[in-house]
Amino acid sequence: MVKLNLNNGEWSAILRSKKQLAILLTGIVFLVLSLVLNFFVSTWIDTIATVAVGDLLLDFIPIFELNFLFFWAVFIFWVIISVYHLAHPKQLGFLCWSMFIFVLVRCFFISLTHLGPPSSAIDIPDSLSWFNFNADMFFSGHIGGPFLVAMLTLNRLLKRSIIIYCIGMVVIVLMAHGHYSIDVFASFFIAHSISVIVKKREFWFYSP
Image (cartoon, rainbow, N blue to C red; front, side, top):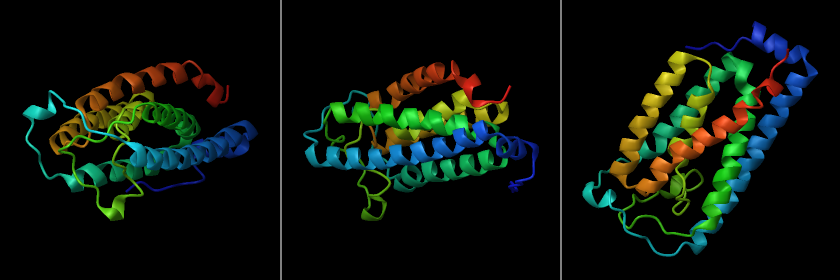
C-alpha cells in the first residue's frame, strides 16, 4: 500500500517553493472548477440532445451488460492515480493543470454537437447520474483522460500500465455501447494533441 509521506523530498521541495506551492494549489482549484463546469455543460446537453445515429462498428458488436466496469473501473483508476501522485507529487501540479485543459477542451467539444447516445447504450443508474451523463458523447473522457495521464507521466511502469488500462477500456466501452466508436478512437488523438501542447510548457512547472 502506498504511504503518503509529507516529509519526503518531493513534498519538501514543493512546500519550500512558493512557486511550486502556488502552481499546485491553483491547479487543484482550476481543475475542480472545470469539473463543475463539466457537470453543468453535460447536464445541459442531456436536456437538448436529439436523436441517436448509426455506428458501423457498434452494429457488429453485441451488447454486453458491463455497467459495473463501465462506471466503476474509471472511478477506481482515478483513485489509484490520485493516491500515487500524492505519494509522488513531483508532477501533481503539472497534471492538475493538464487535466484542467483537457476538461475545458472536452466541455467545448460536447457543447457543439447535440447527438443523443447510441440507441443501444447502457442505462445509467440514478445513483450514478452525478458521475456519468447520457449525451456527453464526443469525445470519451473514460479513455481520453487516462491516456493523457499516460502520455505525461514520467514513471515508465505506470505509463505502460495506464496504456494497457486504456486498451481494456476501449473494449469495455464498445462492448457496453457506452460511446460511439468515433468518440472512443478520437479521444486518443485529442489527448495526445493536448499532451504535445502542455509538454512544451512543462518546464514552467518545475524548479530549476
